[in-house]
Image 1: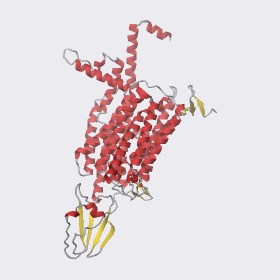
Image 2 (image 1 turned 180 degrees about the vertical axis):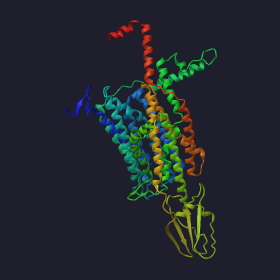
Image 3 (image 1 turned 135 degrees about the horizontal axis):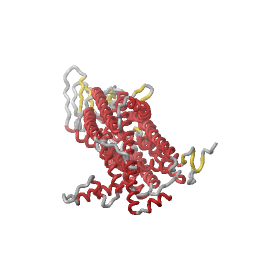
Image 4 (image 1 turned 120 degrees about the horizontal axis):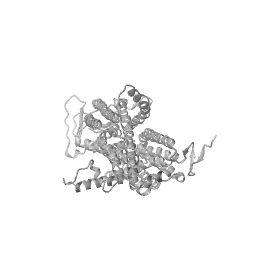
Length: 607
């Protein structure tokens, strides 16, 4: 039997035929994904309950952050390929990432501005400004870190394998993807539990410092583990970024076409052919193939606009539902775990059962048709979410609108009551928490209540008689009655849509792009996610819908329209084989070389 550990041709340690270095990379990815998804799971509730933002503003900031996380990968790829290389880029941006997570943990410490230790901030305005400033700083650093390393880590793992290790490289990417889902699933279960605990130095609160602190610690572990494997890594020097060359080629073609817009210049077969004066035929042909795929990406952001609302609108929806699952009390932000759990189940089921069954039925289920079906399923998921929201709305009390205050007076007597409020009794917050002003006139016992928008709220009732005032604590609003299990159908539909949309989309993109342009398509795919989150900001901000179920229906309707547009685009799309195109280019270059140098063919044969 051979040794479990050996050395490859470059003298690097290997284990079971795999470079030992990849185990550090896989552990690094697990910890990083735990850190990111753990923080993100509780983020919208942190905005709502700690920073006291309303649902709409919390949703807006959440999606702004996610959009930034998917815009920065382009920056990370440029830094890695053109300047620092993958290893130094990962280390540098991971440090930024870790600092950002630590800042988020500090920002959620409520006692930080309580110098007199009375359990309340010394100055509410200063407290809120400090918390917001720290939170936004932390989120920007996290977005730079997680987005910047996103395109580097998987590619760096692929660099560890030699050319003859194609089988091991393929298995590595499967393990790598599993580590991503494992980190996401475990963290989305754990961090909401940590958040639900009570902690504090001078006052008790939901434990956001712990919920953010554990992901920060995991990110620090991720960085340490990655650096620990430094001596084992195969580090490829930066070769220049192909995205830069593609952008320059496109820019020159547009500029050259504009210069020659007069009718005296003959038209060319494709507008990119106007770059032929400066760029070679191969780069132009490859850029054409990439742009052909990127054109199909235009409708795709709408899918992500719906998909990423799992962490915002759907989590906020869960806060108004009953999470009692018998032996388990599920937190609202834990419902997000349904998605990764279903992913683990659905991916093998779809690949091994659904697709073969469709094939046996002799249905031509092309990749673009799969993507169309995925978009349609996501739209159905939001219709399901709207139906659930309608049922929730039936159980909720009527809260006052923004800028309004509601007071209910309950007369427990047998005759009419006269109540007078003088102008100095307009501060309803003080009225609620401090005392009933002595100038209020009572003829019979009354119960006063200030109506506020605290979930499952319990209110203070002031029971007043002629010369006695009693303070009673009475539960006014009944607990949520719509069960969280009703969210499972919408998660199921959305996950089914993700399986046939996301997995198929990446597979299709790679099959239609030249071998050296994969990074360009990866950047384009990540950009669709960023644009999708920006769409949420635009639609939610512009719609001004007062009912949440109506917003769900609006998003579903928009996706259905986009789905039809994409189906039409897909119908007219012609599939290409990049390898055949590149082989044809090789043949043309070879013929050109022979024509220029007749001895070229003889020299190649002698080799």
